[in-house]
Structure formats: C-alpha cells, structure tokens
Length: 203
Image: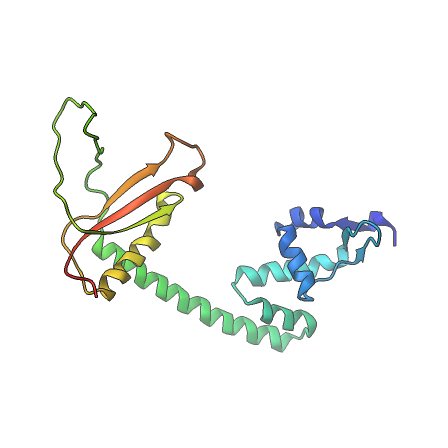
C-alpha cells in the first residue's frame, strides 16, 4: 500500500481532535488498529476507511458512553445493538442532568451572587479609606485551580463535608484570589481559596 493513501497518527490526531496517546490506547484495547505500522520506524498509519469508525467513536464518547460498550459495538455492529446502547445511554444522560440540576439549585439556594468585593491588607500595607477588621472565625476551606466557573463543584464539595460533619454555616462565604492576572495570563493556573464560616464540632 502506497504511503500517499495513509495518514500518520499525528495527522489523524489533528483531524479528529483525539490525542495521540488516546489513539495508542484505542490500539492497545483493540478498538482501532493502525492500517500499517512501519517495521523499521514503528510509525503508525491510518487509512481513510477508518475515518468513519473514528467518527463513530468520537460521537459515542461525546455521549459519555464507556469504551467497553463502544468496543462491543465496533466489533459486532448491528442496528438493534446500537439502538439499545443509545437508549441506555440516553437514560444515563437524563439521570445525570437531573442530578446536576439538583446540585445547581442547592448551590443557588445557599449562595447568592457576590455581595461585596474586598482587598486583604497586610500589617505593612497603607490604605487611605475605610477598612474593616474581620473577626477570627472557623472555616471549612478548599483551594482550586482554574477560572471562577469551576467554583460551583467545590462549593458542593464543601457543602457535602459540612453536612457530613453536622456543622452549621454561620457567615457569608469568601473567595480569596491567590493567583490571578497579576501573576499569569493563563486562566487554567489561577488559584482561588473558598472559605465558609462554620460552627459546631466535627465528628
């Protein structure tokens, strides 16, 4: 087979937005085997006839279908099987949507949008204007990396801990920026600490 009929693994990775490591994993589990492997270099090549299979895998993975189920379908394709698989997956997606909606409602019920924005001053800082000394308080805290949009799941994590430990919330939550645009333009490397004041003795 001529090489101009084949695509290198890097080209396939870019075409289907699938990492090379994932393609190698698909090969390892027997999901998608390269059309040709150069015996001298070990380079992997894929043919155009495999594109439909890769498209199907990408679609099913977007539905969060387990690789085990996808492998069964790819190896034994039939209409009845894929219909059954998609119906089961639809049920799982709907169930997950309901769970996420409950979490969202719980968070929205307990936490309103920002009420104030504050700056923490160290003892050596000089600031002309009104300041407020916050009292000492016991808090449950968590630090997370990434943008503010990632905060919701960490609030939920803290809420689960508070409920498990039978604590009571006794003040407003605070988000303290530790790393932001002042240090890096890479939002994925931002670091924020969430603090929720609590009372009671943990188990």
